[in-house]
Amino acid sequence: MKKILIVAPLIILIGCAAQEIVVSKKSRERFSVSSDIVLYDNKPLAKYQAKTYSLDGGELVEEYNLLLIDNSLQKKQLIGDLIDYVSDRHKGAEVEVEINSDANMFGL
Image 1 (cartoon, helix red, strand yellow):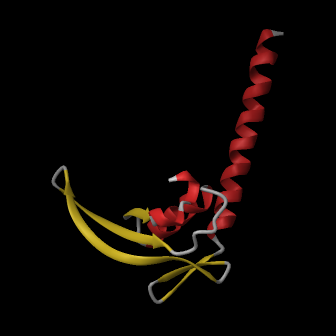
Image 2 (cartoon, rainbow, N blue to C red):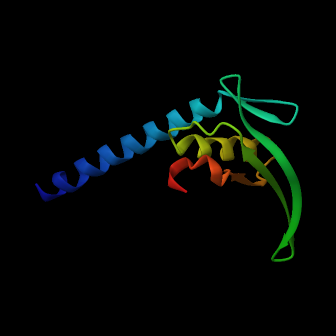
């Protein structure tokens, strides 16, 4: 009986995690790029600001820096999806997203 009580919540947690991954992947399909602007549902979301390289443990690392231009976001997950999208687009590059402090987004 104890095994059932332990296994059942684990199955529920795994199912919820899998559902979140699917939702996140679907969200990334809504991104596109026009010139130096990343679009989400065809609306400007972020702008490429810089491409840099650094050495990390002797290994060359490619990095992209974006500025969030749509400060009306309500979900932080969209920023995570943006980072995943840009990282995938540039074959695993590191990505940073800057948010203007004057936007007061997410309680900065």
